[in-house]
Length: 461
Image (cartoon, rainbow, N blue to C red):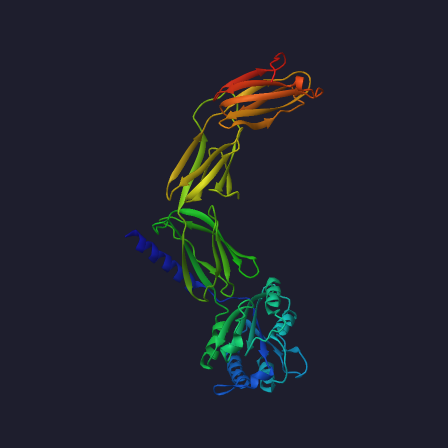
């Protein structure tokens, strides 16, 4: 009975946040880029495409009068000269410029040719410098004639400038003129009838001052929420810039917060579990609340030493975690620390001497895995007064494995080693002869110190 109660609490929290939300205070600037190429004379249902578009835009401009937080500008392409590939900003951004916009719209005559890519390329200069404004581009066209194929490149450059929040494209007329839908340039809507024209404009403009609302819910493999704190980041899908950060927090008494975000941005959402979970290119509707459940079954992992006392200080070993069979490092954690991971199989390396490898360790949903590694011993090494170079090797099933090199400048060394059978190979720095090389086998026992003197030992290799 607890789960329905949690869902009700989540929904009430979202609705409360939505009810208390006030409209955006910053200015929203919308640049209309209107197609006035020769094909706009073609008939579309009740009239020519240009006449229908003019009537819809005139009605729309009447409806937004009095919205002091919204400004509109008009750029047109294809209307200046039939032999010229040109575009022009006809009405710049300004408060209360509805009269100028309507006057210019009434006089537009489709005449020549130009591409939306060219008009889009010039559009950045149309926006005033204002760090607090939300800049939107709306292209209205009856076909995406892009002979140079650079519309996507231009759109990507404009989006990455950080000036534009979103580009919308309204395509009118036959679907045959949009065989390749320009999704790379912005959110594309194809209108095959006049009736949806007004509605689409209203959705873009009137919802531009509303937030979208998200509530995340992290659940285990049985779809049950669990108590945790996890960072979540939202990046702009097109520009790859960070837009929002939040720390997901849930307990049985505290439901997660609802996050208000800009609905004109498609998001790449990263849930920073270990490993992370990504939700790519998520579109959120203005004024709507979206509950996003994320299946993230987790387990905790602790690595510690066996419980034994030592007369020497134990090294602060670092533990490396990788997904099983993969080389990419996923995380590192100190010895005796606990960290949470997504359920799965992992390869573990303890950076001791020698390295301890634990492969294909299974972490199951909801489990608490505690692994112990042996307490190391210590080698107390006394070397000759003559500077010497050398290395330590450990015996294993396949022979000898290198462990570490000695410090040639030191006459004594204290080296912490895991229990096992070892071999020290030593040679004076000033004598490269084979006859000068000596070897010393020794044993390291857990939690004990092993002394090794090499000054008078003449044992040959």
